[in-house]
Length: 153
Image 1: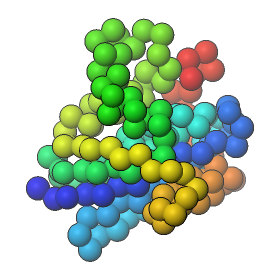
Image 2 (image 1 turned 60 degrees about the vertical axis):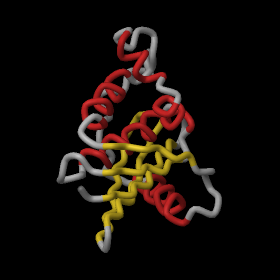
Image 3 (image 1 turned 135 degrees about the vertical axis):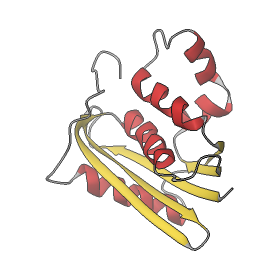
Image 4 (image 1 turned 180 degrees about the vertical axis):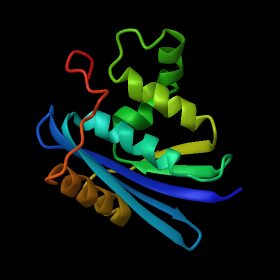
Protein backbone atom coordinates (compact mmCIF):
# COMPACT_ATOMS: atom_id res chain seq x y z
CA UNK A 1 0.00 0.00 0.00
CA UNK A 2 1.19 3.51 -0.71
CA UNK A 3 2.76 5.73 1.92
CA UNK A 4 1.19 9.18 1.93
CA UNK A 5 2.31 12.30 3.73
CA UNK A 6 -0.34 14.94 4.28
CA UNK A 7 0.02 18.46 5.61
CA UNK A 8 -3.15 20.33 6.58
CA UNK A 9 -4.10 23.72 7.91
CA UNK A 10 -7.28 25.64 8.50
CA UNK A 11 -7.83 29.32 9.00
CA UNK A 12 -10.67 31.66 9.78
CA UNK A 13 -10.80 35.42 9.47
CA UNK A 14 -12.79 35.91 12.62
CA UNK A 15 -14.07 33.07 14.70
CA UNK A 16 -16.70 32.64 13.38
CA UNK A 17 -16.10 34.29 10.05
CA UNK A 18 -14.90 33.49 6.56
CA UNK A 19 -12.52 30.56 6.59
CA UNK A 20 -10.58 28.14 4.47
CA UNK A 21 -8.38 25.09 4.48
CA UNK A 22 -5.18 24.16 2.70
CA UNK A 23 -3.79 20.70 2.05
CA UNK A 24 -0.58 19.31 0.59
CA UNK A 25 -0.59 15.58 -0.25
CA UNK A 26 2.68 13.84 -1.13
CA UNK A 27 3.08 10.24 -2.26
CA UNK A 28 6.33 9.25 -3.91
CA UNK A 29 6.91 11.67 -6.79
CA UNK A 30 3.30 12.86 -6.70
CA UNK A 31 2.20 16.09 -5.07
CA UNK A 32 -1.25 17.63 -4.93
CA UNK A 33 -2.51 20.83 -3.32
CA UNK A 34 -6.16 21.40 -2.36
CA UNK A 35 -7.97 24.33 -0.81
CA UNK A 36 -11.45 25.79 -0.41
CA UNK A 37 -13.03 28.74 1.34
CA UNK A 38 -16.30 29.18 3.24
CA UNK A 39 -18.43 32.23 4.05
CA UNK A 40 -19.07 31.46 7.71
CA UNK A 41 -17.18 28.89 9.75
CA UNK A 42 -14.65 28.51 12.56
CA UNK A 43 -10.95 27.79 12.73
CA UNK A 44 -11.47 24.38 14.35
CA UNK A 45 -13.98 23.39 11.66
CA UNK A 46 -11.48 24.31 8.95
CA UNK A 47 -8.68 22.38 10.66
CA UNK A 48 -10.87 19.28 10.88
CA UNK A 49 -12.38 19.71 7.43
CA UNK A 50 -8.87 19.86 5.95
CA UNK A 51 -8.09 16.44 7.42
CA UNK A 52 -11.41 14.99 6.17
CA UNK A 53 -10.94 16.31 2.62
CA UNK A 54 -7.31 15.16 2.53
CA UNK A 55 -8.20 11.59 3.53
CA UNK A 56 -11.16 11.56 1.12
CA UNK A 57 -8.79 12.56 -1.70
CA UNK A 58 -6.85 9.30 -1.38
CA UNK A 59 -7.77 6.99 -4.25
CA UNK A 60 -6.60 3.72 -2.69
CA UNK A 61 -7.89 2.32 0.60
CA UNK A 62 -5.47 1.01 3.21
CA UNK A 63 -2.81 3.68 2.77
CA UNK A 64 -0.14 4.30 5.38
CA UNK A 65 -0.79 7.96 6.12
CA UNK A 66 1.09 10.48 8.21
CA UNK A 67 -0.79 13.73 8.77
CA UNK A 68 1.09 16.79 9.94
CA UNK A 69 -1.16 19.42 11.50
CA UNK A 70 -0.70 22.44 13.74
CA UNK A 71 -4.16 21.85 15.22
CA UNK A 72 -3.95 20.53 18.76
CA UNK A 73 -7.76 20.28 18.62
CA UNK A 74 -7.53 17.60 15.90
CA UNK A 75 -4.22 15.94 16.74
CA UNK A 76 -4.89 15.49 20.45
CA UNK A 77 -8.50 14.35 19.91
CA UNK A 78 -7.15 11.45 17.83
CA UNK A 79 -3.82 10.73 19.53
CA UNK A 80 -5.36 10.84 23.01
CA UNK A 81 -8.25 8.74 21.63
CA UNK A 82 -10.85 11.20 22.93
CA UNK A 83 -12.78 11.12 19.66
CA UNK A 84 -13.54 7.43 20.12
CA UNK A 85 -15.09 8.09 23.52
CA UNK A 86 -17.09 10.97 22.04
CA UNK A 87 -18.33 8.61 19.33
CA UNK A 88 -19.51 6.06 21.91
CA UNK A 89 -21.52 8.82 23.59
CA UNK A 90 -23.01 10.01 20.29
CA UNK A 91 -20.88 13.19 20.39
CA UNK A 92 -23.21 14.53 23.09
CA UNK A 93 -22.14 18.04 24.03
CA UNK A 94 -19.22 18.02 21.58
CA UNK A 95 -18.58 20.61 18.91
CA UNK A 96 -18.51 19.79 15.20
CA UNK A 97 -20.10 16.33 15.42
CA UNK A 98 -20.83 16.32 11.67
CA UNK A 99 -17.14 16.64 10.84
CA UNK A 100 -16.00 14.20 13.52
CA UNK A 101 -18.38 11.56 12.12
CA UNK A 102 -17.15 12.32 8.59
CA UNK A 103 -13.57 12.03 9.83
CA UNK A 104 -14.11 8.65 11.52
CA UNK A 105 -15.71 7.16 8.40
CA UNK A 106 -12.68 7.94 6.22
CA UNK A 107 -10.08 7.51 8.99
CA UNK A 108 -11.02 3.85 9.35
CA UNK A 109 -10.19 3.15 5.69
CA UNK A 110 -6.48 3.83 6.23
CA UNK A 111 -3.69 3.46 8.76
CA UNK A 112 -3.33 7.03 9.97
CA UNK A 113 -0.76 8.60 12.26
CA UNK A 114 -0.96 12.23 13.39
CA UNK A 115 2.02 14.46 14.10
CA UNK A 116 1.59 17.90 15.63
CA UNK A 117 3.79 20.66 14.19
CA UNK A 118 4.16 24.19 15.46
CA UNK A 119 2.19 26.59 13.29
CA UNK A 120 3.89 29.47 11.49
CA UNK A 121 7.29 27.92 12.18
CA UNK A 122 9.88 26.29 9.96
CA UNK A 123 7.74 23.50 8.49
CA UNK A 124 7.71 24.51 4.82
CA UNK A 125 4.68 22.44 3.82
CA UNK A 126 2.64 23.57 6.84
CA UNK A 127 3.39 27.17 5.88
CA UNK A 128 2.24 26.40 2.34
CA UNK A 129 -1.01 24.98 3.73
CA UNK A 130 -1.49 28.13 5.78
CA UNK A 131 -1.01 30.29 2.68
CA UNK A 132 -3.53 28.14 0.77
CA UNK A 133 -6.04 28.34 3.64
CA UNK A 134 -5.77 32.11 4.02
CA UNK A 135 -6.03 32.65 0.26
CA UNK A 136 -9.11 30.43 0.16
CA UNK A 137 -10.70 32.33 3.07
CA UNK A 138 -10.06 35.60 1.23
CA UNK A 139 -11.50 34.32 -2.05
CA UNK A 140 -14.44 36.07 -3.67
CA UNK A 141 -16.14 32.72 -4.28
CA UNK A 142 -16.83 31.28 -0.85
CA UNK A 143 -18.99 28.21 -0.37
CA UNK A 144 -21.43 27.62 2.46
CA UNK A 145 -20.22 25.43 5.32
CA UNK A 146 -23.52 23.56 5.47
CA UNK A 147 -22.60 21.85 8.73
CA UNK A 148 -21.76 25.06 10.57
CA UNK A 149 -24.10 25.54 13.50
CA UNK A 150 -23.34 28.58 15.65
CA UNK A 151 -24.76 26.75 18.67
CA UNK A 152 -22.49 23.72 18.16
CA UNK A 153 -19.27 24.91 16.56
